[in-house]
Image (cartoon, rainbow, N blue to C red; front, side, top):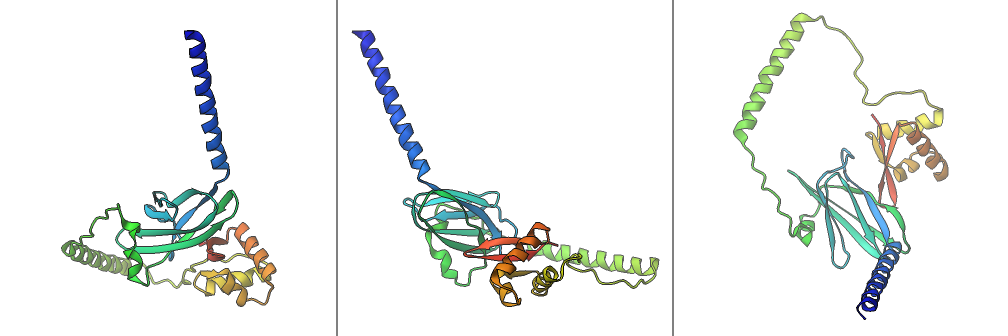
Length: 239
């Protein structure tokens, strides 16, 4: 009777393994993947080592080592928060409602906190940040050395070269574009090189659909970069 018992035990183990594997696969199929980048509000560059959490039960929390994050979430309403601390504090959060499985991109733009109490929540729990220590002696020494070096370079250039008149460098590359696309690009440049798509629409005499098409055209040409912010977009001129 040992052989039939061994066969029965093996078959039972295989059935249990198949059952749990199928349940896991079904669970993953019902999950939505939410991912995106964590960006600095001013430079619009990715922030490595930002802490990102989502209010699942239990709360999921990760360190975005390369400035990107990803969560697998079931249907529901969620708040995704992110904090950044490396010599300065930045904070951002986004809301998302998931009603079906899929792949969702949700970028988070980080801003300096207006209300310091925003950091009283438990997002910092279990994370130890080093206390910033400033050696002002070294700062003064470096500043003085840089001042002497700059003065020397200035005097050397003044003696060795004749004065030349030249046009001031432009912050943005001027390219030949159709009139309507150039108008869009000029508005963004005049706004400091970054503007929300909603504000851009207000400054142009075109329909929302045409503005979206022109923005997409400029993005394809490599002249604009679009960062998703909530339900809107931030447009940035590519230097």
